[in-house]
Image 1 (tube, rainbow, N blue to C red):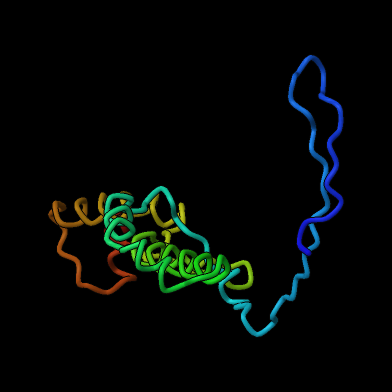
Image 2: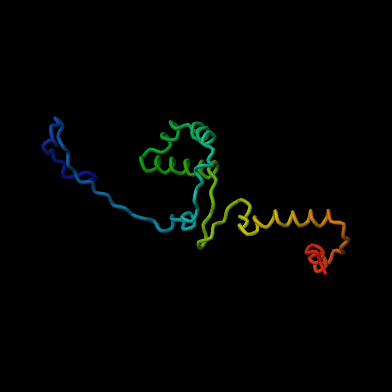
Length: 150
């Protein structure tokens, strides 16, 4: 029996509704083969999700047929969760976490030191091109020319 020990208790406070107390007996059998440990390492980027497409995807499902072909609650729940997870995989971007490293489907982040040195490099190249001094393209000589060289 799933529900046992049903009792009616007196109302709480000034309510005219009784409190119902019952015991639910559930036998959970966790299947270790169905757990995918790599799924724990994936994080969804919900702020970038395409909710309109996800809504269209879920609305396109014939739920009455799904309930008809899945006669018990567990099968309907499994169908619903699988459908929802498929929609999330399709319309919600995600990234994978690996040993404290984040692997994203985008360009790598440029360190601050390199970002700050890019304008300096551009300024030095412009200064070199505008100077009247002719310098060969050797790194040693370019440094001498830029520093006013001796």
